[in-house]
Image 1 (cartoon, rainbow, N blue to C red):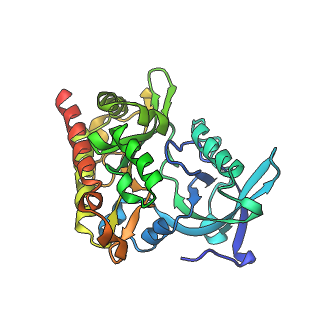
Image 2: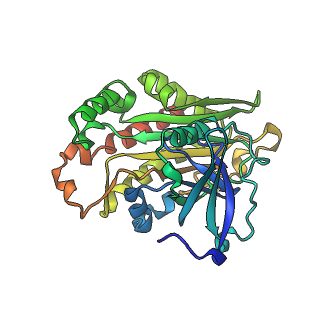
Image 3: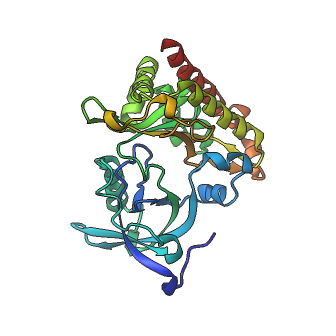
Length: 330
């Protein structure tokens, strides 16, 4: 899907750092209440333009490609996108600043890093972004958890120096031992209304036991959480990944999110409608971050050892089992 170019079909919209981004090394921008965008990576673009049928229920709604611009100098800059008017129909253009609580510190730091380091908009060049539905658009107090599934990072790189750095990243975090790493989390505690937030550096610094405690905090914070359905959904996603044959995922992320509403408006568990994609009303799971999705037809697949091609399997199983252990505790 190519970006739109005709001026009469586009509208210029000011973008802001997405206030609920909890993980990732790239900036996520909010266009409207219901739309966000992130820098385009070719592998991710290819995945969303040919998403396997098995995985479509588990990925964010994809809205195509747009160009994003940066104007101003080092002291002040404005980010804006040209978005097809057909997509903007009935959209609010204030980027949701008056609807959801959130500090946006991680996304803002990523945006500043991209601008100051020249990773984006160098020499005033416009940049291609991928546009998605905002998964937490209707939430009052979004709680979100970003988990990177990847056990062996170093097997994905040919450069020896970088390979050693990635090997340290695996060995010195929960990636190697647990098959996954916490890349970011935000949780609102309903009894206090306070926000607890952790970024990827926190996730890299904790051990296995601490990681389990973080997960216990996240999944135990919602009084509505049906943990058995959540672990089943993780297993169903894993099965869908194994059943599709179009892509091999060297790494991928699971994004868990729910709305931590005020206690007086939170529905009881008996009133919660449950299905496979909607785990429960307000608690959902999606696959995100397909920068390491390699088409099965790509010749480089044959050059990778089997353990790298199976990189996410151990983490998927381990994560589901950990969530099940919380069920037993209850």
